[in-house]
Length: 192
Image (cartoon, rainbow, N blue to C red; front, side):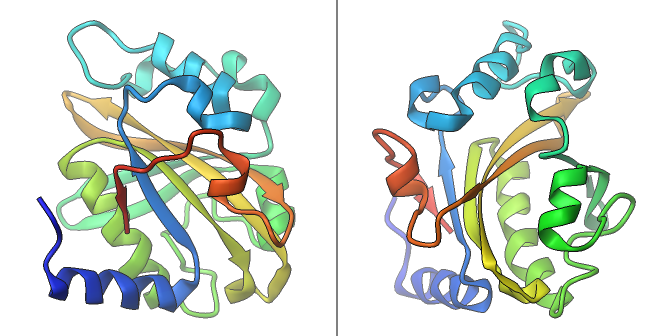
């Protein structure tokens, strides 16, 4: 189904608020699609039980994540009232963002917290409705660090059959790079 003109306008406004890109890809997209994130997608997918669309949070073993330690965040998603709180924020992320989000809500330490809650909150709310692999990217200008550009992958995790956490891995990319230049055969099913 095609988005309505109103939906397109709202999504355009959201993107302009942060100047970040947000994309959704199917949870069964080939791991090779994710370029530098291929190995983490392969590990994440290997933890999925046959009766579930994505892995349970309890199935993730931090020993498996060793190559990405420092570049990982884990967000806890609460549905009612809806909130996104980081339970883990890696040391490399802290260097890049200039803040440690561990035990803080989404955007709370940015120059415009309401913007992040509105934009990224809507992105995570979509993920709650129907899990997808998310690709995000942009500069850290809302943190006074426009010289740093990030590309990240968001991998949904379940508890009791519903989205409960999101495992994210981020990398630094060149200023002129994007998801389209860094990920081979990049074809998102939805862009927010």
